[in-house]
Length: 380
Image (cartoon, rainbow, N blue to C red; front, side, top):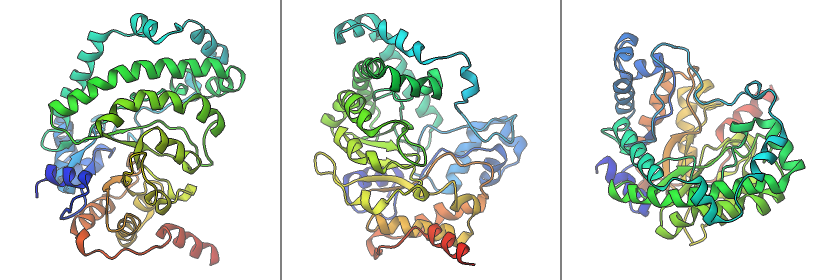
């Protein structure tokens, strides 16, 4: 079975020889070089080649558009981080001022705020770049901008954004609406690219909406003012049968029903320690009766950085259990793998997952292994 066949069959709910392995989110030039079996100097001369070599060693079938660790900052541990100190002087009133300039109809937004030819060209160029960066692997389509834009905190900072949701909720909703109108139009070009390049009919996306306690703002406000606009933006994918997978940091359980209602039928990035219950998620069905997809398995906050090789294997087997033998499961990391993760743990995880035959797996229900470890530690 080829890697592409494995991914397509898993999406279709057909038997596979092992669950598909997805890579692309590993940082640290030293770690990449160590996994690939090359020197740091070799990595520095060809970073993308080093990333490809490392993911071949892991046995990856597909890649999300990969993080390419800096060849100069060998201790790089973050990319695209939002820092509140970057938004000094930004206030909630800035969101209000922007909202007041937004046209009142969809037709006006598209006429005044959207360049059709440029958007089409930009999306085609993005796919060309992603395909170059994943050459030799199956590209997992990924774009964070296909829904209403919740991550206004990346534009205005957390304080100004959250204050605006409290003081000017209608203004923030209008910004959500505008972003959804534009995203919906662009999403037709995504669909064209997925068909043109014969890519898996899935889209990895989603915004950071939750912290470790729950949603950053009221679930009621999200239900009334955010999710309806996201549903409108995502509708072209849902009608086309392209599966939508939502990135899930923090405790997403209070908004899972809303995610499913707008068209998401898959999840990625569970922080089990925040109360996420994957058995609960696996029991749910999409709006068209779909079984859930999972891009999941490897905790970057607990097991990967601090676990033993055996604990890493145990976590893989836990994922096989809660997906009833790997149904809809694509092995991936819960978030970007930092430089603190021992490379032996990462290699063990991928190689162990590849060694398991889903057809012979007998699933059982159990707790997340790391929670059992922590409870034993507390009892000492």
